[in-house]
Image (cartoon, rainbow, N blue to C red; front, side, top):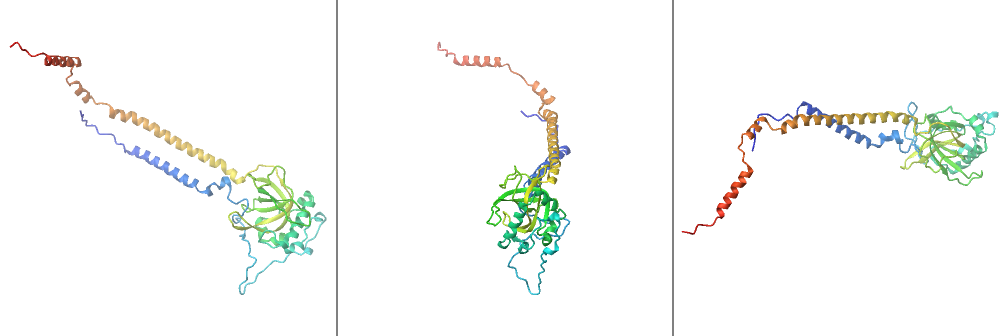
Length: 355
């Protein structure tokens, strides 16, 4: 039975519903964009640091002259009309030795054979290399620290290496990697050395490489240092040291040779700037989650109101339909069965044969 009604169905695509659908599409787009951004490794550097920042420089220092981190070729040839200008090594006579520096002054004659932008320590540099390490190991740490200077920057050191070669420099920064070095044969009896990579405020993501004979207790020297540690170190500047990274790229870093790395009390973190951003990023994530949760809750409440107001009205029978049903004739079921039984008995009665 079909009942006709003059009422039209409610408009499901009215302005309110369209706004809801638009909000849902916007939320879905926001989730898709967030997923795309989260899939880019560079967007997580604030938390993990840039790949290779523990063992390779990654760029220039802003506000300074450009530093060329490429390793120089030892077999390059000059073209016609090209002149190479090489700064003259510093003469020992140019250095005035004071009582404070007596005993810790580097032998500049030995350092005259040192070459910048070469991979590793060359055979002709080994004697000067181990001589500075031996001098640092035999000197008192306090004497080295008093004669070390921090009046330099990473950029100036890379651009004017000849000027600082053999000078005691003091680094204050964060230690990002520490490992034990294999020591070659030497006449100074050195048998144990450690390699560290230190980042300072002015060096950014470009590290200093330091080699020492003593390290603080409690720090793993197997390359498994998983957090950066605030340290201070005084050592002799040796050269711009060339090395190869894990992705087979060549870089250079200032190489300092010293006695020990001293741990400085303070907070240890991958980067002070990165830690400072963490609360803001976490707060933004919580705010975004709260907004999405509120939106979903409002959608749920609106759906319940829609069901209560519209679906109930659509499924409820009209008064005309109820009146039409009441006017229909009714039949008693018991009476219907009784009539059926009587009709069956009359059909089964035997025929009259008396005739």
